Image (spheres, rainbow, N blue to C red):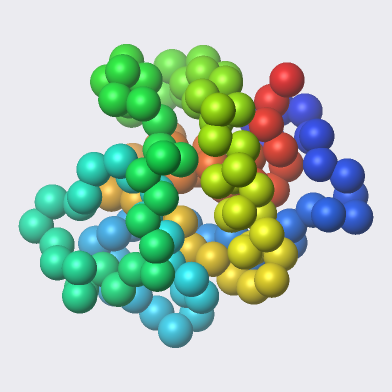
Length: 133
């Protein structure tokens, strides 16, 4: 979807092992490991309610990139390109997410209202297909 696949077929993550869920949706036993992938904590929600297994702030887009994007669908492709470039600085964290997703289901938790154009959608694609070149 986003770019060139750079992960060999033998180590690809099964697509159904990486789910997306808004922070404001209730947790489910089917979520597997729940990982918040936003840099900022979701508004008006407690740690208990969110029921996270991990919070990976470092994998979120930079504040500058997030502000530039502003969830503008016309900037989506360029956002994905810039986000992939930023993630090259954190490939260790991306590799950890891939490893966890190979072992079982993970749910990337995000707070954006736009469920189609947000960093978790791009991150899921990067986990499944690798970073764009």
